[in-house]
Length: 398
Length: 98
Image 1 (cartoon, rainbow over the protein chains, first blue to last red):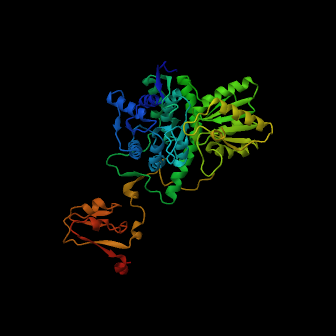
Image 2: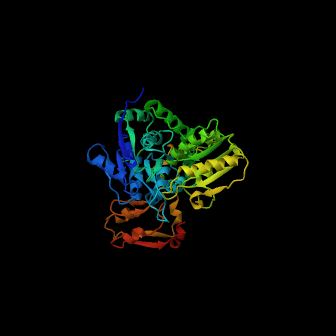
Image 3: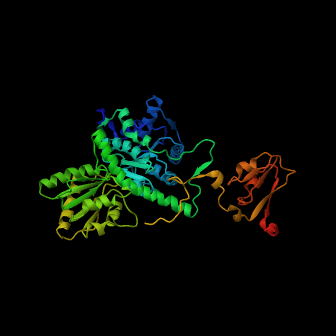
């Protein structure tokens, strides 16, 4: 069975986020506007005001309350949605951990932006990266269509009985949040059909009026260990589930994204560039150009950041001669970028090959074509046994 | 991996019955002072029960009394009581009771 052709609209990434949430019919929405996400919060409020979306829209005084509202609504059984960015995500830090620990299937959009300290109202993945130990599932998308499709897939993942975890859908603030692209919005009935298998599953535990049950309160010693163990095991199950849902989504809606990672021209590639987010689109273009020049290069796009798709990455990267990793964030205390640092833990399985770390695209600086060409040239030289620099801050060397 | 641990929670998330388990820790052993009620002053307003953090004030019909198995001795009931009907008495004075 195939979904009907949807309506095509040319809208910004933020508007796509609002449409993506709306067609999944959340029952409770709480969001606080923050650059670069504000348009999303406003558009969703408009949907509720116009009666397009039948949801309780809670106007909160800050992001911490936003997350606590959707957490409470979620454990009471509602389908929930929120969106934030940067300072907002940081302000939710405790609530992020509670939401994940309560196993509340909240879906949140995070428009990636640099974090507090150096006041950069600009794009970067630092907010998402810094929230990696909160227990959430974190997925990074590349373009506006993928924002929409991934929100739909996020509900199917979060509310799956075997998973029961909150999912954060990340897209590049400023780049995608304000970029208008043609996006196909599927008919809402078809989204209902895609999410319908959730209704066949056993119901999760919910708060019930008059019944004194509590969540997350009795965790001393073995209670804590058991809850954490189950949480970690559920995160492990997320990996295959992401691939399954991607396949089911593609079979129905006609668009596949590769699941945990997308492999582009990797099969016969000798060297690989690992990228994520909107920068992956540029990398794909440069890979094509370099292929014409005879360089056997491929790209792996990281879609799932938490849990880290170790098994899929090993399979895709084993036997390659060198890898370049582009990080749009920092890993304080390590000289490599965070995604590179995590990839290096797989070196035992991938093989003793050069893994070059590139820091680029911080604070609205573009990961542009010359930068990626440089990465490919250097990784290619490293693959041929030439000396190489382990870590390169590209903007600092220009 | 061999899992020997017997599950505490029946559900995937850490849900439990609050009637049975909210008061499951031996918080009474943390107490250094205990609330002692002067029944003459108490007018059964219930503020102590409202403010009690572990919610261990028992409704006795015309007054409230702390469940000493769970009362941590924080003294909030004594502070909030508008009629000063609750006194916090050091546990040492009850040493004979064990």
